[in-house]
Length: 330
Image (cartoon, rainbow, N blue to C red):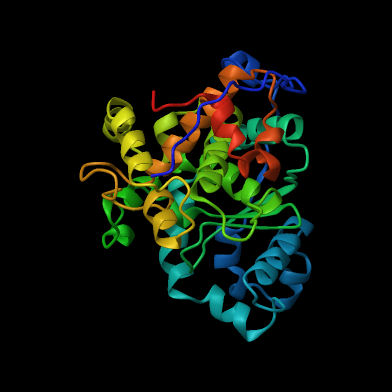
């Protein structure tokens, strides 16, 4: 078994945190809401428009349709692939429900406005210009290209919706609208600050990167919940917090921390009903939780560390990060 050497931590931490748009509801008013262009119902009725009506379609609609056709590889809006999408079962089935459930998205737009302001301050290389809501026939809920974001609202109709009947509980619970801000932040970071590999990367590096994403969610999403940032329910969060020491010791004793095996990474970081490799009762993605706790411990030692620094490959690819953190499963 490889031993984790806990050496004296580094004391030189650079660049202070940038202040963000934080606080209660009054402070949150300083963050202007971000408009979400509703393409769901407009696309639903698109085939019923005459050529003249289509030509008069406003620029928002045209830009949105263009974004959808590009990101979903549908060619030109007049091509058969797009026409097929507009007439698809998914669009027909979900659009009326999406329009009804998301009749008022003002709260979501305020949340997204808060995210945009904080990203500009703390992760300025992450850009977000336009957001279009639509209905997607695919499993992916968010698409990003050229700082434009497509949000598939049919992926957030509530965990009891019939469309998710075949899904396991750990997936169903993320089908709630409250998870949209967390998914948006994760998708944007994945697009603009993707994990940079160095050959056969150790599990530790991927844990630290995943932990950095959770940290970003907690700092950027207004009134963030750690359980929701992790994709857990409250009982699961309570369980991992109560069993944190044993989970860490199991990870270390099984020599998984420095594993480069894909299966180990999958078992510890990917969404799943459990993390049985560490404990029969452990919820999924325990490696993400432990990665977050290492990052949290590091920030306590070096409180001037910026959020941006956490996404530097030199940070998450270094074993020194764990050593500096002093983390031992508590």
